[in-house]
Length: 123
Image (cartoon, rainbow, N blue to C red; front, side):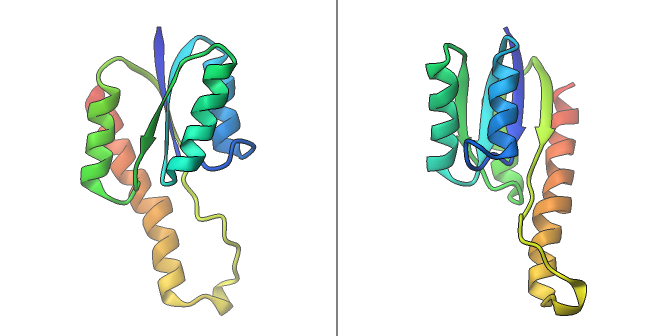
C-alpha cells in the first residue's frame, strides 16, 4: 500500500482533513499530522470508518526533533507528502505586532523548511 503524509491537519471539514480523506480513498495509508490530538483523531476515525487506513501523529511543525520523530514514525517508502500548516489568522501588516509575524513566519516558513528537509532525506 502506498503511504502519504499530510501535516497541518485541523478540523475534519478543513482543507487538511479533506485532503487526508481524499488521499485515503485512493489506496493510500495516510499519516494524519497536526498539533491537536482531538482534531487529528477525528480525521483518522473518519477515514477508518470509511474502510481506509490512517494513523495519527501529534506534532509541532516548528520543533525540529518532533518533525524528525514524525518522519521516523512514517518510515521509508513515503509516496506523497503535503505541508498544509498555516496560522489561519488574517491581519494587515500595519496592524501586526512583531510577535504575530514571527509566529506566522515560524509555522509557515520555518516549519515548511524543516518538513521539506526531512521529506527529502527519505529519498
